[in-house]
Image 1 (tube, one colour):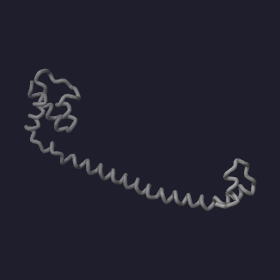
Image 2 (cartoon, one colour):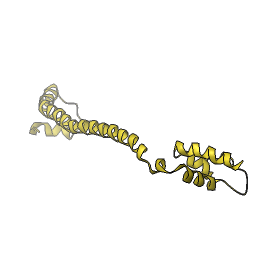
Image 3 (cartoon, rainbow, N blue to C red):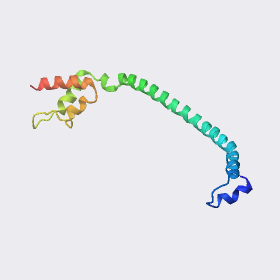
Image 4 (cartoon, rainbow, N blue to C red):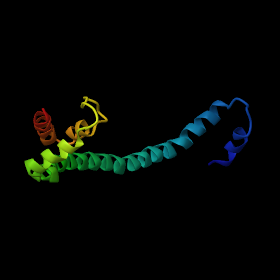
Length: 124
């Protein structure tokens, strides 16, 4: 920075018109440099955000197809039926409560929902 502007930096006196003009001229180049630097900083952030969105789209697509490969889908119906049957309470009637094991399993996959209905039918 300019030497003749050191005094106004350390006082609260009103600057003269000449000082204001000098400061404005002095700040032109650093202000432009700051704008350019901010743009350079923003460019990688923009690229990173675009890549994160792309990553999320790809991951969502993969996750959707991975549900097809879920091991529970390969369970034979009779084994799944037995699992659900043994999840039913024996000391009282079953209730539709989210903490009940049989209801909890229906949140995992639709195959359990179908098999749970079969297990309930078999109990009656």
